[in-house]
Length: 565
Ligand code: NFE
Ligand code: MG
Image (cartoon, rainbow, N blue to C red; front, side):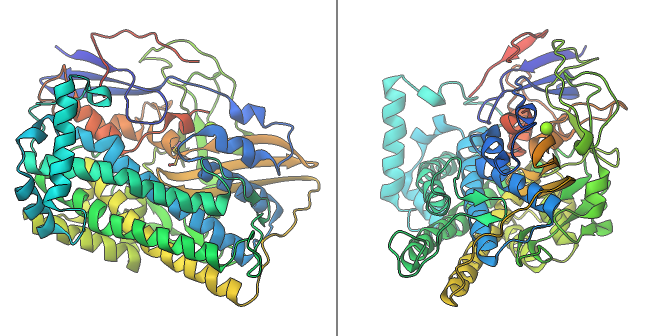
């Protein structure tokens, strides 16, 4: 008989997510993804000045703050057909890249590694053997025996104190944890080192954006960074050099640690390339514009339907006509007043909370659809869409990762195997490799342009009549779009359709699952009372409910209720 398990909240994410699964013969037979928070920021924006919207929207989230600022100014610029000076494009791109690198590092180490790494095995590890293994995989200078010994001593001291703190509720000793003590020590040591490198990435955001989280340097029409090579208080060669030094360290960490660790862990859990598939419709938008008009990009976009990688359909621009017309949001199973699926320009956000009911309404997340279909977004979508188009940078890092996984574990990963839980982790690391290379490219583009004497950063916006626009960004968790209608210089409607809204979407009126839900079906559970496998797949998407749902409901009907680290 099917048994219900409720995990509420799913932790090591941003915001509040509840997952319910029905388990039959130790495998998931049904699933519900439910966001348990709502804030209504989209409604707060109505009637305000569109030039201020980005300051409000970046408060959607404390993790991906920059992304909502960027999508918001792009939405207004799209409505006004306003071009952006080259310096502004490069500065924005650098902020987006640096933020994404921070985000991907934190996701792998702090938010998901402990689904695969058993901290309690670390006391049994031999630091010398760990160092030997690590040095065989990477030239990273932080892989010495002393480094691993110090990390092990730290874990031993915490364990001896009996106060495990944030490591209290992990599924330690779970039969699905299979790494050797040495690999557990290696990953944990890098977990601690990662804290330093994600900070360096954020320092770049801070230097260019004036502060982080929540940058202060955007304007509709460009950026507010003063550029002056003769001023100590403006963006000058000194600051650009600081950024270069920080990025050099981050790039090294990505290539020598993050990419290597993901491939090593993947090679040691190859069955997870067969689990967690779910929705195989993928969506990604082009990003990192290379010119003022946004007609050329460093990251490709497009769609793949029904897992047909060869049948990829590319998008030419970041706000492609097809994309503008295809998006709707369905609220059949979300806590909003009933109605037909609506295009975001005429979208509504009228709350109607009813409590969790798996047959009726059960989430604050709306169900976004592309021509009526659920879509998976995120690094996997971006990598598949790029790979299928033969995008050279995507191919370079995807082939590198596939080669590393084969070298460690003899597992030959094909593009088809990327439709999986480990595929999402591998794709995020591949994307990080690509972005690391692009960080250096865009810093060079900015430096060269400034050196030529171009200090322009802003084109002023002019409002008249009623106009509508969409601003997109390929954020760390996937395709983000902000939709705005401006009338007489005031916001008439504003809707954000966010990466985690696509992925955490509940069922739609036709009963089709969203990507989290679909990916959990058929997942085998070694111990249903300790649903580690559910966490592995949900975390592989890097959920952010704060973004997805713009009240907290503690009610629920469940058989087992679990809270874990
Ligand atoms: Ni709050 Fe965010 C957005 C999502 S992207 S984290 O937009 O979902 O990383
Ligand atoms: Mg929304």
